[in-house]
Length: 103
Image 1 (cartoon, rainbow, N blue to C red):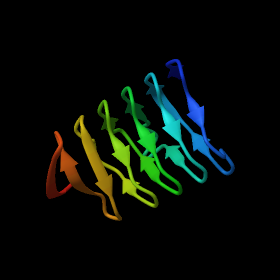
Image 2: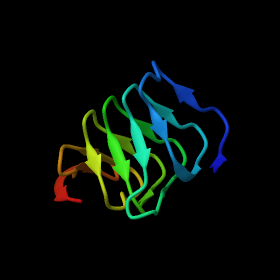
Image 3: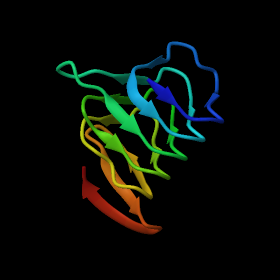
């Protein structure tokens, strides 16, 4: 696994990180799972925040400047400059504009 610089683990209790790579300025909170799905792992870009209890699974790419909300379940790629919430995950902000798009 390749890990960038300036990684911040806020209260990293029960956190499991298993990814191909994690970019620079990654920040995550407790109970986060970055894991495999069908033996494949994910790639995380730069400036990504993963909130409490979120799970990101499988062969997906999390773009740069993404915020993943608390409790969010992500199994598909997330475009850069997005904010996502929910289970199933929904894009609620993209390129600074409010939206509502299923992931």
